[in-house]
Image 1: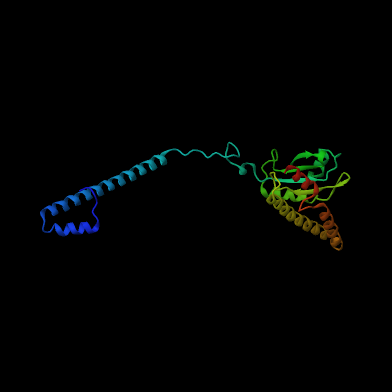
Image 2: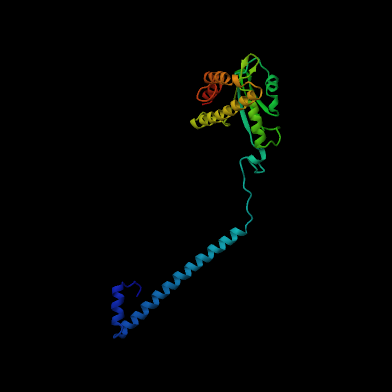
Length: 237
């Protein structure tokens, strides 16, 4: 008897086996067959679990491979380079030299310059190569020094100093990131200038100075950035 009996058939066979020797023999044979199937299934399950445990033990005993990174052979990533800040310097006179730009921002040294003077702008990088192991706090301090030079005179022009979001592209997210960063730095710059004016006894001229700065910012800004910066992003799109 190879086929499996239904509950109804099994119950009938059990009842018949009470009085019929052949039915009893058939019931015992059926029970033995079902037990053999159950034992085989349990053995297969135990074998599968044993193989799984063996594979896990072999995997655990293997030496772990070092994780590769895209940031360098040592795999230290950003922690190796330290914090980095990039500023956009716009409206620079085309006749201006790199030495003159460095002299203007010498209070924030050391830094690297990526010059685009033929287009009237450059990028100032803090904590780039050759800048040493400067921590985040120090870079932030130097960034504020640079932002204080926003709207100062370089040659015969009033330059723009803005914090760059880093990377490339012209997405809405990038524009919002640039705008938010520059708004925060502009507030800090105004607050610092106001405190310096108060120390020098120039409190009465504070409001006039703020109004003048506000008008200049509105004329130089477009979606939170100066015209040179906006034009650069439009070209790179």
